[in-house]
Image 1 (cartoon, rainbow, N blue to C red):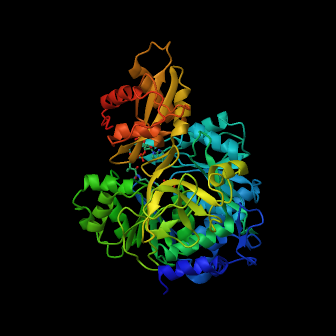
Image 2: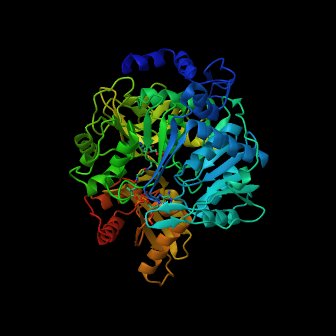
Image 3: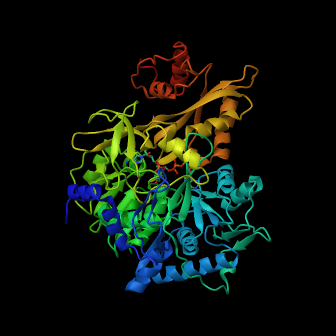
Length: 633
Ligand code: COA
Ligand code: AMP
């Protein structure tokens, strides 16, 4: 097989031929006449004149090709002490039945359907049933509060919502149905109906005339066939954090998504039909879309849907138990999960309790893979540990070590090299290319490859402003870093107000909007401070109204509760302090980076633009009182 360098060079010299070749692994209803459609540049479309169906490619074709008895999904739930498998043939039946019931209630191609479900196979079935009809799904992560769900309902304007009665966190039931009811009560848009999957751990009350039961509404309904859609028909919308409280609705087109994911399954993850692949993430995140649901199923592999945590369900050996029990060939997880395991099992003793003979590779993404964690995994797992870098917007890896093509030497701290489709450059403030080794903004030359976002849902102008405006001809990733002499990328930080908490992408701007709504808060800043387990956690600094007489502790407690209530537990917003003033530039911009450096005890230079350096003394005192490192000017 050709090595990485020649595969990348082949793409670069003829991208059109490269992607048309990759497209041969998809079953088309009408074949595309070409790959790239650039008439509406800088918004690009891929395989636009084709007709195709993702559910057919992810499910039906495998049954037709004789894989009907193979497991498509394994649900492993240490939280409910249960494991169950669903074969491809069963999956086809279940999805066709669900799609038929949705159709009977009026869901058609192009309608939006919100899915609000925990880690159960029915979440994947709901996604696939939408794909079968050409309906556009939007999955909302269960750790978000009702308000966040309402914001997404108002933006996506779904015809229906498919939800579960509850989710299960260790020691706690997540009341999905009451959260859904609260979201619908506060949203302006109203849905035609809700489908509720009743879980035995908490059976929800249905609203008459609006809610139907998952099983009941499928009874006696004719199963639906796959509806072929145009190649550039939106497959899904996935909301992700931007700089404000209004999340960005990343749009994913149908054909490019399939072509790219199918290519990655072999080329990056080295997964073939019949292999077992496990992405230990959540269906609510992009990793869940690409590599719990669509990628492995397109490849004809078995995907693991894991309802548990890396530790505590019941212990730090759970991951290794799942790998042994289900014969997992490759695991994809976030470094945070490994840090949690390493903290409980520093010497890797639990790893040795299991037979990992069939395990071939560990993939990490979602946040920077710190060297200690990578080294621990290398040492104890004895398989390649591969960091790779991507974003909700791209849907698949921008940079990786392509195991299925050639395993390149690993450089710890780097997600390795750029993948075909991506020409990555590091740019300085003026938009000029930086020399190797020099830090700058990471940008990708347009067009972005198949599978990446063509736009934001109902927000073309926001798409242009957020990603394309700063560096004409490029997509701005929002990450800063450098490329070394060997072409390896190093992703060092975000250039915006997005933080990464336990591999979850969160907006500090959104948290600030919530804090600012507290009656005693005059002004505030939220920044990401270093955390040994979660990588980063948010910390709030509050300036109170001059008239506020209430004890600070009380206000802080209310602020913590407010963020949990409005954004959700996933924000992990637990700490805040009261300060007199916030350090700002002379033009009024809060110096969040400087505050974060003081909190982390990282040496920093006094910003030349600061309006009053003395404020930093007060900030350092407050941060020290909160247990942070303090001023290293
Ligand atoms: N539904 C409802 N609540 C959820 C949730 C979900 N799907 N996922 C997380 N939460 C809640 C947690 O229960 C926790 O609530 P708490 O404040 O009451 O304890 C809160 O959100 C914060 O979650 P998290 O930061 O994930 O902490 P945790 O204690 O649940 O788990 C780790 C810690 C390290 C084990 C966990 O973060 C982890 O496995 N991370 C891997 C991240 C990952 O897979 N990211 C996906 C991107 S690839
Ligand atoms: P999300 O859209 O939630 O997947 O988050 C994407 C962001 O997470 C990226 O823009 C990076 O800031 C960060 N990220 C993801 N993977 C990596 C990685 N391998 N190394 C460093 N940062 C990463």
